[in-house]
Amino acid sequence: MNKPVVVSEETLTEPVVVADVAPAAKAAGPAYVVLAGISVSHFLNDTMQSLIASVYPILKDTYALDFAQIGMITLAFQFTASLLQPVVGHYTDKKAQPYSLAIGMASTFFGLLLLSAAHQYLVILIAAALVGLGSAVFHPESARIARLASGGRYGFAQSVFQLGGSFGTSMGPVLAALIVVPFGQGSIAWFSSIAFLAILILWRIGRWYAPQIKAKKIAAVQSHPDAPSSRRVAVALLVLVALLFSKQLYVSSLSSYYIFYLIDRFGVSTQAAQMYLFIFLAANAVDAFLGGPLGDRFGRKIVIWISILGALPFTLALPYAGLVGSAVLSVVIGLIISSTTSSIIVFAQELVPHRFGMISGVFFGVAFGIGGLGAAVLGKLADHTSIEFVYQVCAYLPAIGLLAVFLPRLPQHTR
Image 1 (tube, one colour):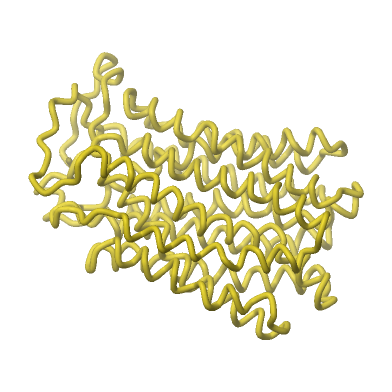
Image 2 (image 1 turned 45 degrees about the vertical axis):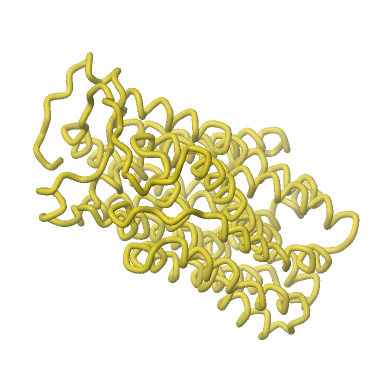
């Protein structure tokens, strides 16, 4: 895999095989420089994405938006990413696009500039959709690059990749509190420099990626004798989607409305609430790294069990805790629930060999779609009831983790 191959115009139109890493590449271990680069890029990408949710209080006050309109901004951003990610993944499975990541980041660049200058609600929605488009291009192909650079340690590579994104997500509230709140909506344009830096990094990664592509017609895949049947694979994929639903919708409820919850219930300032959100997101980032290596070592199914169901007692307690208790519980919830994403994505990739771009796009897309649709529905629910009621309902979401009992046991060599 590490040996350069000549990629002709003809072969670039054929399916891209990202099968098990070659023995020589496994012996050499992960390509740490590439993993670091793709993780840093994920950090920059998700920092810019989380900035959108972090400036919601400013947009709400400036343009007199209700919670349903706030949810629609999230939906515009995340639905764009949800709709396009599987399409992008499917296309790049067939035709390699080494520099698509840098090109996609340009959409985020222009989206941030537009958001900084937007003075109408429709323009805000368009700007959010452009940032979502950049995310749609980034995630499927970057997940494939992380696997190529894994040296056979797939869970570890996916966790390194996820770690950058989780820390990026946690930085949005901090940057909003330190920069956007004091200097206003126009200061969002300053963050376009982050997008430009990401473009440079991703262009360099594209130069590494191009000769690594192994493009050829896919031969018939020889199934492992202990591999699950096609019917069990279909059931398992549906279960994984449901598990990702429970995790992502709960995290979306905190990411989109936790600031309003703290302001409404405890009367804290916007900047203080953003710092509390940062605490949750930082805890979410810390444990995001552990899920992949633990899945490599003990199996992904057990990690999925623990990370989703283990959060249930704490999510049930959160709506009834005080301010300090809420902060502590949010940290515990973030530490437990965040480790599941890497295990779910790698589990899904191993269920559908040679379609890593498409399956990564589907699952990243589902995550974004659930977050966007969930934010809109929860916003509407909050308008008709209260933010506190929303968190009482969402507290039961981790119980969906019981469905993990239907996941098959994968052959040892795929774990």
